[in-house]
Length: 226
Image (cartoon, rainbow, N blue to C red; front, top):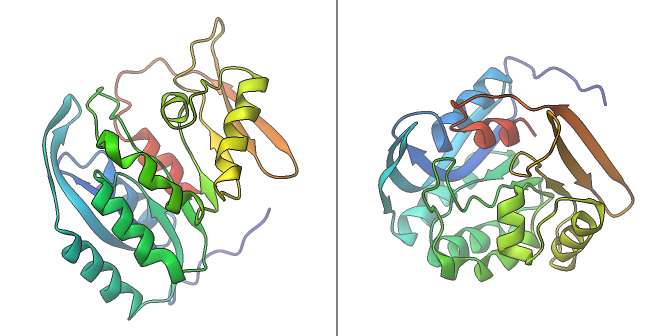
């Protein structure tokens, strides 16, 4: 689909609701840099402040729900939000607050259900998983990697049948579309297969697997593009 380049005088306003990464490689920082690169004016609602770098997460402080809500309301009262991207939400209270804030928002929502950092550090409380149901119902697109999909659905999407089963799980909860990321799926070849599933079709994207260690923030950057 061919789009129209953003008017530099009135660029669209996109909102990222996620957590801060002190190293700048992921989270809010990566989202905003990506939006700027795409000619989009980016705003943010910070859910948590993390102390992290490319090697791991050293600590995390989740903001009070009153602060999360106040940030969103300040933005929503002043800006025409063209799209919302959701990242690390950390706790059940934060997830519920964000879902409540977005209850009346009718624009596109990209939901990246961040649960574990590339380094292996857990970024979402286990009791927050069930709270995501309210957000799935508001999501235009959900973008779990294979491990996140398994944690949520109980199915590891490593072949067409489980991919379809996992996608149906998200559809049952109200999501419009699901992009199942294949980077965490072990394969015999040198390719990675991502699968986009909608109510009417399934599309696969096959790309070369990049043998790299500096992958911190790859999800934040990739799915802010969407």
